[in-house]
Amino acid sequence: MRGLFITGTDTGVGKTAVTSAAVRWLRTVRISVGAYKPAASGSELSSQGGQVWGDVESLFAALGGRFPRERICPQTFVASLAPPVAAEAEGRQVDGRLLRTGADWWRDRVDVLLVEGAGGLLSPLSDTENVADVAADLGFPVLIVARMGLGTINHTLLTIEAARARQLCVCGVVLSEAVPLPVADVSWRTNPRELQRRCDVPVLAVVRHVPGGDLLEVEELRRIPWKSLPQPKVSAVFQE
Image (cartoon, rainbow, N blue to C red; front, side):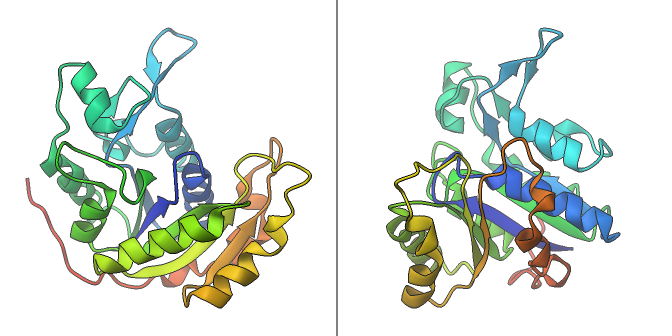
């Protein structure tokens, strides 16, 4: 099973939108694809009065409703806090082993698995581990979704440096305007050039804000070589 671990420079940078768009695109070209989010926190009330998690719903919809939500994200928590803090508020604890074994369910079911982290690369996922720890154990190449705008060069370079310090393979950066930039902020014009000048990680796409639109319509995302994802650097299998 090939795969890609999608992380971000922060929370709310557009990881789920990019992951969902990639899932939909791979489905259109008849690639068997799955989506996995090891943990999610911050729920909303559905129209039926139940708890729903926006990221999980987006991935579920992108997959065409073909896979159970509990397999897309086996650990969900109500509070809009880091997963271990949100779990503690419920008298629970994040299962560190399940963060990894949850990915195993997808083996032999799909050819490509897109894994979406929670928050940024060093965001906590359990009491003792962060997103980078799980990414390292799963072994998939890392795609960084970076918030477009002033300050992103520092945040992106720091994320790349942190990933490489943990021997993670960073295969690219997607610059994402998750929310509309102020008119005065024209840094989006120079962000790609400056990033490319200062590191050897390719900027694969620059996604401007599309009000009410579908990121699948953004041609740059379609040009990313999703079908030729590199093989995992390790063959990590975590059996139940």
